[in-house]
Image 1 (tube, rainbow, N blue to C red):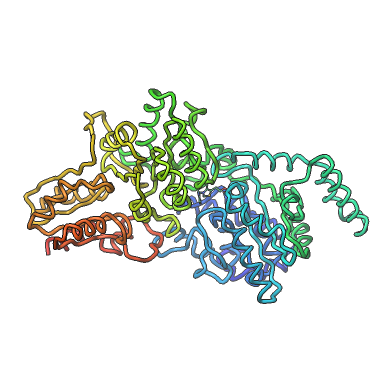
Image 2: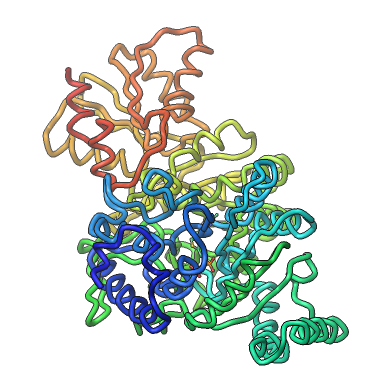
Length: 611
Ligand SMILES: Cc1ncc(C[n+]2csc(CCOP(=O)(O)OP(=O)(O)O)c2C)c(N)n1
């Protein structure tokens, strides 16, 4: 069938199981073809083709609410709800979102991007259902990786003892988070998967009359209970079904129909293969195929390559960490589920005992790191800027208040591209700069990254958060390092008519632009965002030239606002203009497009200054 002509999921109800299977094949080819051109979350979607078809076959969206945790695996849902025609704009500026998006479709009833919110959302929807006296079903589809997070468990804890609620939680168990799933829960799911007896009891329903079948399941449960074999979900108060094969539409439909009619909290455990139907993705152990850029679908070759001599900031940082680990026996990396994205695969191969993946548990990772640091272990904690939002209280309450010292790598800071507003790294300066006992730095070159990391590990007495973006950067070629022993900025004096303060990639971008156009603008590299270099700042305030500040974050509470606060404490008046992102959520699009939209591109900035 022509997927582009699908208007909504109703047509599924008229199809036979054979036709549903044929549709699954077509959707799989469409996904591989389309994502190979645009990039996107390939593996996770290939794993839930049959499950999503079966969900829309059995339930009636939008009355029934289908909520995908994270939402990165909702592409099939998008296709079945009439959005296949927009896939050539997936994750692009003003294009189709890579996550569920309420303004895209009535079938998207909840938005995410960060993990582990779906069960909590279903809890809210269920209580609202009780208040509103309505009858819809609320369904959360949660990956085994996202289940690890405390937030998922807080919601299970609430729901499991509710008498008047009938939430449906579908565990999509592919044994993978982005890479291999970790922790005790992963082991428990393994154990449950291996529990053949229960599986047998639930699979044989059809052969027995209903009352006998009920007894059979009850006895199976009792035996499991005696053998201490109850699943964690039974213990939490849910009726547990499964595990079942998530690629067998017929069986999926059977079980979904069964749980649809339950009037109590239900968990259906579905086992899927991440990357199903595309061999390189099926065989992927490290998570390379979880989220991809464009690729050649015949050969599996990735098409986006770094420019010659350029590499990612994550790689620059991880090369430093490899060297640091060599010389520091008491050094460890704590990481919440992002080894691949953080460029740490090589580190893990070389030092498997020195890197601890705690799963998608950002708050835990900060608390845990603080305790390790208090016991003398040197810690580097890489977290994407937007995911660190989850750990705000642990940074205040556990880390900095106790004066524990760690180095936090704030990866994906600034504007991030296709992941859109849930992933923009534009709040970290605001949520960190008012906390005592933490410094914030950002390098503008690979060389400066080495100096700042040396400073962070060897000189600073406080915790240091080092920001770096998802851009690529010219490689470090072994030039002599600057030794940074106190928070200092640097100045490129071009005998200009204005002073412009910037940090990180933006500083380098403006240096390139100003120098190649020979423009009369002095550039200050504010590599310490907190604390600021007050000696240089005092000079800039005294200077008669106007002062401009370029942020790669929201204008509210960035470096510019720190400078204005400082000026007001001095009771001085100074004309300062801040270029930064406005007080609104910044949608998906590459950095160039977003900068252009908000007049943060080099040309607009310079034009404004020279006006
Ligand atoms: C709070 C948070 N941390 C990290 C991520 C990055 N992330 C996106 S998907 C994913 C793995 C999710 O694994 P799972 O729930 O098992 O889903 P799968 O992709 O395997 O289907 C991670 C770590 C995120 N989206 N949100």
